[in-house]
Length: 122
Image 1 (cartoon, helix red, strand yellow):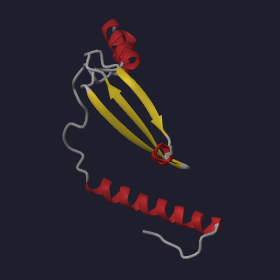
Image 2 (cartoon, rainbow, N blue to C red; image 1 turned 120 degrees about the horizontal axis):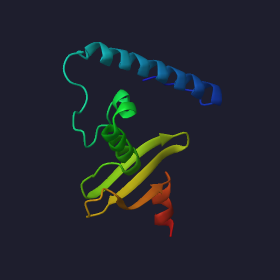
Image 3 (cartoon, rainbow, N blue to C red; image 1 turned 90 degrees about the vertical axis):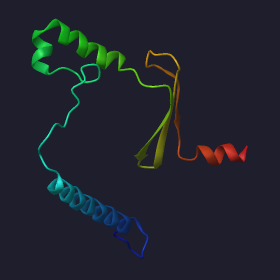
Image 4 (cartoon, rainbow, N blue to C red; image 1 turned 135 degrees about the horizontal axis):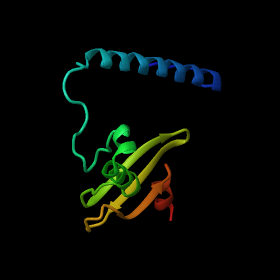
């Protein structure tokens, strides 16, 4: 883990570059340990789009491709929180999924990184 004792912009930049280099090292180590044998993709046609050559030649594949990319696939009911790191902190996406079997969510909210602090100050 790269660190620095000074805190101006240039040193923060250098720490970030060192972190990226460490990440590349970790990725290379992980890739060396992966064995390239076995199935790596899901074969379920309900959630996997068909190959492009079939999309261009078969009507059923074209319809399946359109349905997957336009409507998505059915997900179970419940809640899902997906954090995404942004330049100003973490962006959180909270998705409340409805109880119906359409796969469409009941509501969706994007939370800023300070949403808890704002709520507590009210």
